[in-house]
Image (tube, rainbow, N blue to C red; front, side, top):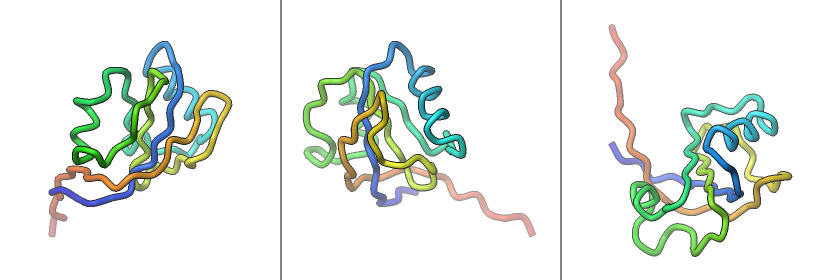
Length: 101
């Protein structure tokens, strides 16, 4: 199913995705990384999964984006290595798994 959600975006420069996740762990130890997407350049193809044309972030100079999905427990705040890009309306796809009786 597709769900309409508000997606927070941070941007920074990291040599690898793992370093971005390590930084997030430092600033948000309670983070649920199943609800975080770290995207390296070229962003367009990956962002198209979340945002309709023209609804995502504008041109980004940094090489890494962090998408904060609902339930991530990551604050949308500036850190030593990330700046706040903003919050944007988007969609996420999630499978609903029925509970067993």
